[in-house]
Length: 484
Image (tube, rainbow, N blue to C red; front, side, top):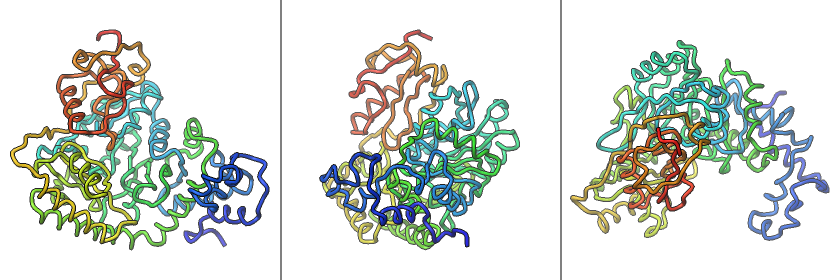
């Protein structure tokens, strides 16, 4: 009898191994926790006893031939993919492997500007050249939208030598492009279609949710199991379609992924896949129900705008992920990052992120109705206690980039460090972003403009967590030494 979705091969192999009480003369050096009692006390004896090294009974992630291979087969079946790779470097590693497998030095890749930093980092590594499809920006909400099909068609026509089209499915805020149409256009032009599904794991296990990448015919998709799928932080999946060579992708993954994969992460992927395959549809139906309830209650408060599918326009907002509790806050006179800070500091509620105009509360299979009630109540009190009127806030999120040189060329070029005020007009050689969501405001190779500098100053002033530059205070920026 073959393995079925009721099985968790990696987890089951770990349990068999643990019960044998094997004497360890291998790594890790804590030797099932005995060498580090404080760690064993923190994590628990069972947890540290399963933090083991690759060995024959447990397979090897670099070249799976038994239980890890079986776990990957089950994941592929559950997600409707031709193959699934277990990833222990987060979805960053999955996204980078996907890009590195599709493009190389000098190749063009068509993508929206509001991609995660991992995509830009992959281009620094491989030397690919970005061709941006500038997303529309919702002027009221101040957020970048999806890619318009016509804009993608134009980019493909103007860059017939591009090798791939990259799509967010969905964006951090829950907005989806017309993925099926984009996949079809890419394939008709002989290009691959890659999907960042860091925030779309549940699409594969929900009714009336946006189409997942594999069902839409995409060639590869990076799926953050640890976000909405319930696995441990840093565990992810890379899914591939029928026209992608499994062996080559494995070689690409092995260029950067650790040879000492954590079996805690692998087992969590295995168990979470089983949970979603067996109970995912029911679980995510409850998540949708909680999100819809929260949206209705937040909108009743007044001032806030918890948005949903009413935004859909058939193109740049082709669909909306109704599990995302995205809330516009500017109309109560507070930036999203200010509401984020107030929820944490005043009400002991930690949400996913706040930007200049919006906040996102991430709902998933572990949330409870009483937690939703607490969030709604806190938002109501924040409006009453801290809300303002007539406050002007910068709401424009998207600034069109001016790409002067490739990210790789800029990152490795000779550079100088300049004060922010002296950097306008120069070409940036590093990243600047608010994190989360980790979408670059500046990336290597882009020209620095006064509007970008104003945005950076404003975001810093509002308390956004700015990351990327070598200077931790972000008073200086590294720019190309050569003036272009």
